[in-house]
Image 1 (cartoon, helix red, strand yellow):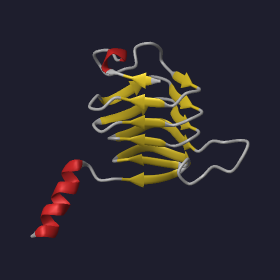
Image 2 (image 1 turned 180 degrees about the vertical axis):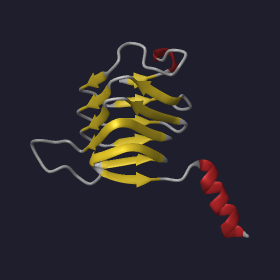
Image 3 (image 1 turned 90 degrees about the vertical axis):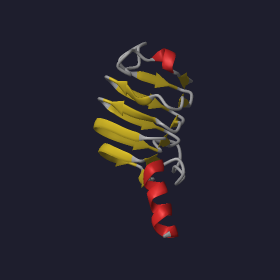
Length: 128
């Protein structure tokens, strides 16, 4: 399942419903800013937001195979990655990757990555 600009209202909210639940991987196109859901975002597979896109869900985010945001992740409640009832999830499936996170990681391994601007600043400092 893919979320594009056409799926969002003028304020960046997912227009089709307050929450989104899917059995498929959820991919969010690049450069959409923060994609907002009033409810939750849940999938049995993975959630991937391309560079320049982030995720904000009021009730939480849950993915069976990992969460990756090109920007930020923001939730009022909790984030779960690697939810798998029939076996032990792999480290990759439990990984939550973002530049910044607001909310509580209830299950999963958080990996914070620098923004492009921060990476450029580090490169300039290292080459000076």
